[in-house]
Image (cartoon, rainbow, N blue to C red; front, side, top):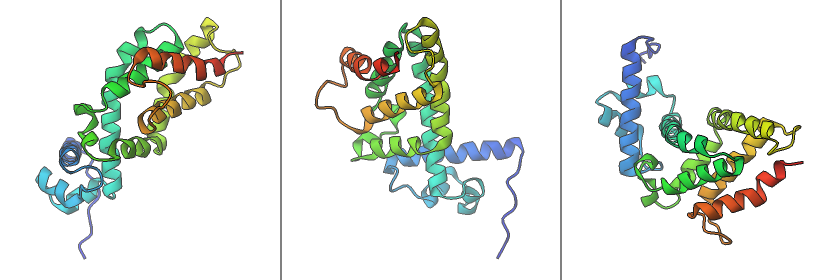
Length: 202
């Protein structure tokens, strides 16, 4: 059996890895998370199956990288509008509204056309420590600003509060609402204010 050589550390290696991730994203758009295979990705990228495994240990790791990259693009697009909002509740509501608004668009890999795949993607991301920590890091500065304004209590544990915000946002994607219209930013804002931010106060 031929040994697989170590991953090169050159610009060529980085370009190849990106090419594989790009190909995987196109395959996911075409077939969805559940049906995409390493063979599909290798053909799409124009590389051998062994080359795909050289950069990604298994199919799950490759799918995860595609989802992480999509999440990073979402955050980059949402941040300016979130930052413009003055209160913490408005910022969280803006994030929730953004997620709902973009759930069917190009950013979401076309998964809405396949039953349960947006929920599967959200749960896979939420279960990845790396991604969850990035999301927590995103919210901590906004929570610190809210604490300085007196909007939340002084002893609030910011990272735990940031994780709670993310759990709420994930639930807005994965669990339909029966008590308010989660596509309406004003109703989302009121829901967030009544049931999330109030819990952060003294």
